Image 1 (tube, rainbow, N blue to C red):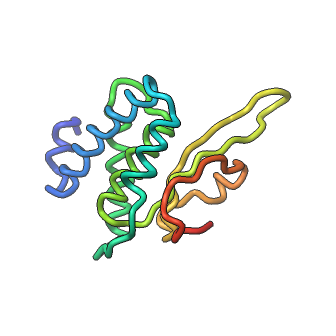
Image 2 (cartoon, rainbow, N blue to C red):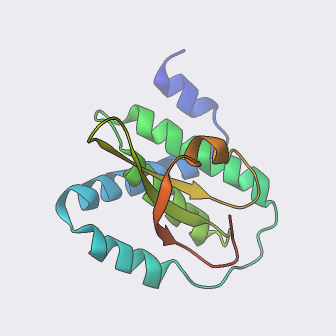
Image 3 (cartoon, rainbow, N blue to C red):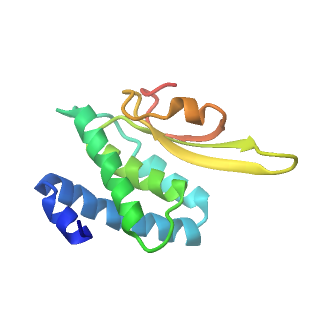
Length: 149
């Protein structure tokens, strides 16, 4: 099945989420490459760190957003890093009032190498890769204090 056929087979809501994810991934990829992270972090903390609103069907919406970001990352001609994907997913979740925390961590890999990774935790257990990310020491945490690990 071609990419266009797959796109047109999506529901209207999934198409809107996919288009939003494409736009946010483009912006976040550009920002990660050009702007210092401390400025990106400041914007995320001030603009998207406000209170949590009620979300009618949170778990379903979280799955749709994660799927949209994954699809958008696979369609783009360059590889989207985990930081760019996490920023896009975090913004999409927070815009809908879903409590989410963006985490960035580091771990030692080998003799003198260091691995870094970023991910989003919703606290609802929906596709959260906690066991995969437990080996990283959290360095940066952006999001409401209501979602605790």
